[in-house]
Image 1 (cartoon, rainbow, N blue to C red):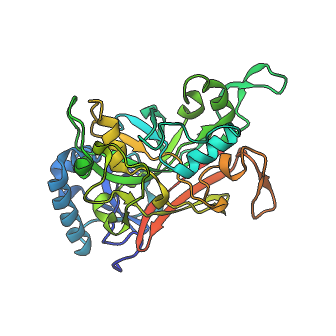
Image 2: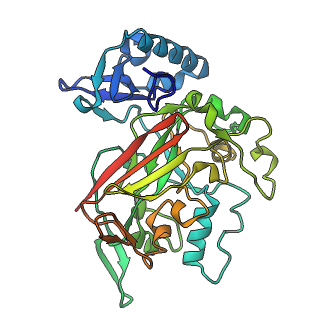
Image 3: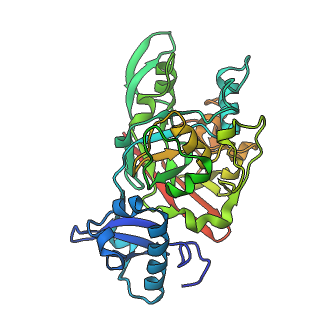
Length: 375
């Protein structure tokens, strides 16, 4: 296998797959195959999940990664084509938090909803804004997304309970927590990599009409909680070193949020397609807040994180119109339709539409997240 290829021996994202016999095994992705890694560390992978590996910490992560690479290089791990297995969520999801870390996305949303006011909330450049989600909403790539019902405002000013007419995607990065933290002891920015195991692509589906009605005065609830798609292949931070980047922040964050040593931004270039038509190319390097700052803020009040926690970046958007990470921005809240390659137009997603998000940086490739909308 060529070193440097998208899912080559130097990357090897972790996951779990179920074969025709129904047996679940821990695996790594090697190009278009899954390599069973059970025998590399039976004490960690006996149940077919990554739970024990996540909790084991950086020293074990490093040792296992080296052992897995050696085993794959020696062709000592059984290979099965991805087409013959089903990738499932490889770990037990504990909590789920979604952030709002893109200044471009937050600014565009502010301009759409508050055209006569300041686009960013006063707190936005001082802390990573986020909200708690539902862990049960996370589902692996390939799982269909059912169009949700909810309360929406009608054109005549009334309220009706009905299927959403403004279904949207949000292209995001998800960060998977390995080592838990202690309640009352915040995780510092410098210590973030001792807790975060890896990264995956995530699509935080949004029903914009349901969200708009329920979000006054509080935040998103049923407009978000019906489904969140995540890639079942987790790329360890150790495979992303060449994608590291720093972002400029003004004003300077509070001391506990400053990145003084190593940058924790990731220069991953995302691509979003609807039914095979490329509609946007956002870049995660444009995120204002890094994953380390998000984790530090999440724990800064003494809250703890657990093994299997997932926190996401929020929509990744860039400065250009072709870098917007959701239909809310791409169509400017439905006022500017986009055209697909088959000649059809979209302001929001139709039943039958399939959305796919990919990401790469040089030789680094993250496993895609994709899902189809069903009634």
